[in-house]
Amino acid sequence: MAVPMITLDEIADLPRGARLMGLDLGTKTIGLAISDVERRIASPLETIRRTKFTADVDALLKLADKHGVAVLVIGLPLNMDGSEGPRVQATKAFSRNLAQKTALPQFFWDERLSTAAVTRTLLEADASRARRGELVDKMAAAFILQGVIDRVATLHRTRLLESPDDDA
Image 1 (cartoon, rainbow, N blue to C red):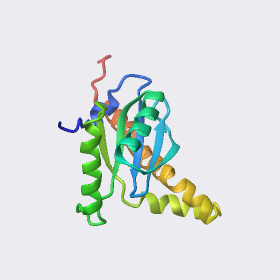
Image 2: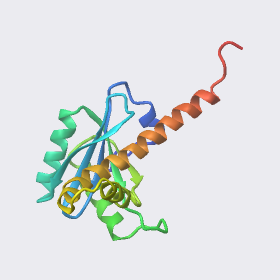
Image 3: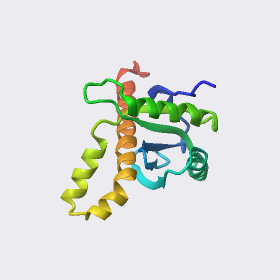
Image 4: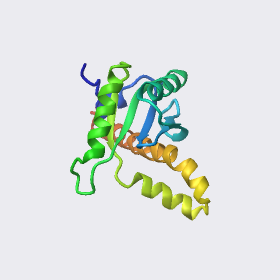
């Protein structure tokens, strides 16, 4: 089964109230974030401690259903030069396997430096090492998701500027 991928334009055209869920896939955890119903703000949601694929996905999809999620935004851990390494391959494999369990469309978003940015923010906030460990994955998911939300908002503004004036 092919992964049901979605474009930024399709995300921009989602019906009102359809939420986005951000995923930061780590080897030990999956950080989750959720958008508000107006898709303006991403908020950290939860961190799933990875055990087995089926249990991880069941927990993820249960939360997606509970929050009315329409699209899964998955952070794609590209190398700094933009190339795809082993982590990208693992992410894409997770995505393909996830597609066997749900028809929810997926969208990949470049997540380079998301964890570094979040860690820097937490250090500036003087968060302890334990607190940073507790928060970093779901905050990285929110960072990834906010990037998509901001890009979609820019797309909306561009469309408004390019649309012909109906009064002319």
